[in-house]
Image 1 (cartoon, rainbow, N blue to C red):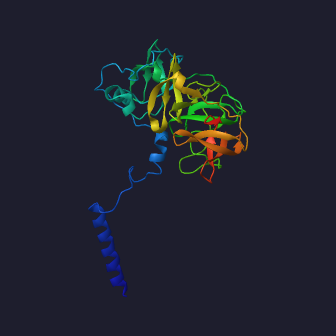
Image 2 (cartoon, helix red, strand yellow; image 1 turned 180 degrees about the horizontal axis):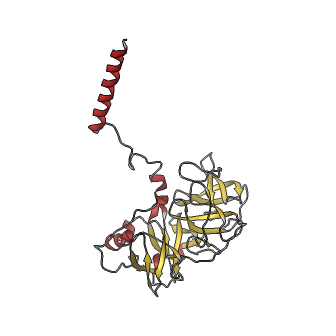
Image 3 (tube, rainbow, N blue to C red; image 1 turned 90 degrees about the horizontal axis):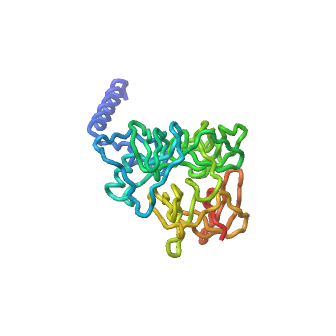
Length: 310
């Protein structure tokens, strides 16, 4: 082929490609297309600034049976709360119709039953029941379980301290993200990070905000994460971001650190509920129990705080 003919062919091909792109015939990479990076990590995606100027009323708590509660959060401290728009949606549509994710915000003005919180782009007053305080001045040591947020991403996270040599800025491994024996992790970011000062709270006892519970549901045990316990009721976050209030009599606390060993029979978290299985391995340093669930040959790494001795 002559050089001139080759040049004409290449030019024609480029024109054709540009025409196809201009007509929108090539598929685009979108949030709907990229299910691995978006759907699997929705809870860790930083929220966009929210604007709700159309709502001028009072955001109320739409879950029946839960009392008005105070808060221990102080002005200027970090708190974990859902985005304000979702609180309005829950009030208008019903709490069971909304998906909740608890994000880092700051307390502006704490009150007896309701508090003013500084969200990303606005300051709003919300019921204290939604608020998880992150008190300033916390210190942690190796093996402590803490509640924080994914600091290079977003979204509430439990984590285990793997290096507490600087107690106010411990290095942690996140527990509410898929386990990876690698420290660096993959495309979704590192599995271990140094926490900022005043950005975490040590979980010291069961039923504290952030700790896990097992909820009786017929023959099943559903998994929940405590947002607030008060009186005879517990407000919990459920699988896939749903939330609900349950009688305390239906809620069983889960140990923060399971006292289990290889060969023990357990009930462990598996897709939103506790399933029966056998312990294959325990690694206390990274806060994981490898469980072989009944009827399966593979093993699943389950976080500390999500395992019950059977």
